[in-house]
Picture 1 (cartoon, rainbow, N blue to C red):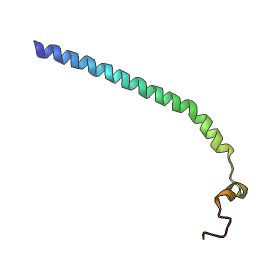
Picture 2: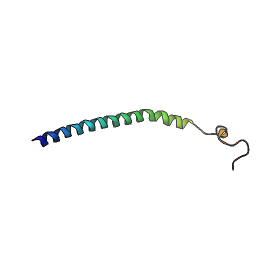
Picture 3: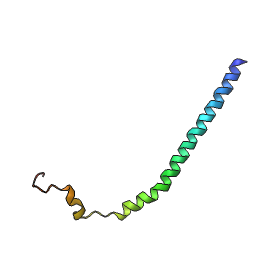
Picture 4: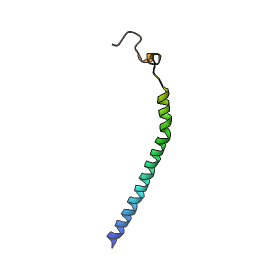
Length: 64
């Protein structure tokens, strides 16, 4: 009889942890979906020109 009680307790704890895990996953998915349009908008608005890349090019003649 004691084994049956422990199995039920274990099942209940597993269900509690599963619900907590699913809640965290749902929260993360929701936050990523909410912030994704802002990130994609910023990526679409950026156009790289040579003027923007000059800060990355060596100005003293070093490099290839």
